[in-house]
Image 1 (cartoon, helix red, strand yellow):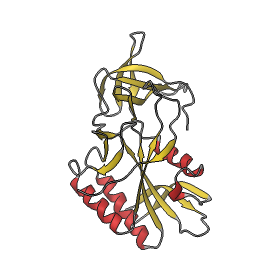
Image 2: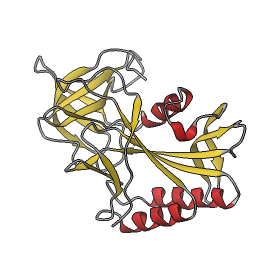
Image 3: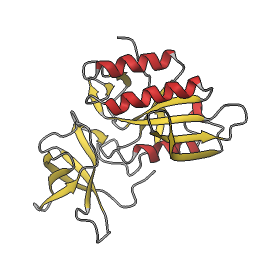
Length: 243
């Protein structure tokens, strides 16, 4: 997927109230942008760091700018807009770039399911030889020394999703946890036991129960460390569950 218009570069002043970020534009103007991320954004909000914004032409929007990308280290980009991963995953599946999920002819988003009243991100059906696949998508941006970690804060919602996925496996369907690695510096993905120990335990339990765990990295930047304009999932990343 591509951004419809070129992104606007700025410098981060601060993020606050979770959904707001003050940014200084190249001409010195200071604006407030929408921050579409409910997480802690650990490691993704460096003071005076380079950020890139999209600009909406919808006159009804109170905040026309949306924070999309951040440079977490020189030449290293991360996507902080958590509205993007589902679309990235859906496009990659349709294009056949996620080998483990090829062969499905139908994809439905936000389908209600489960005893805990959840919505699955993507429900794949119509495969000639495989059962339906329930795909939960998670955005990975927390990086430490080339390793990616999820979650970046304690997530009871994420724990619920793992229980729901295990239940679908018990019913005879496929259940897939897809980590969308929206950080160009991440080489492997691990559960963040140091942040949410219970999530790590549940993730390993889910794997033992038959939940498939995949990770694919997005192409966010050019060699000069600037956005490439595209956000396609292009290559698998190893998931390491050993403690």
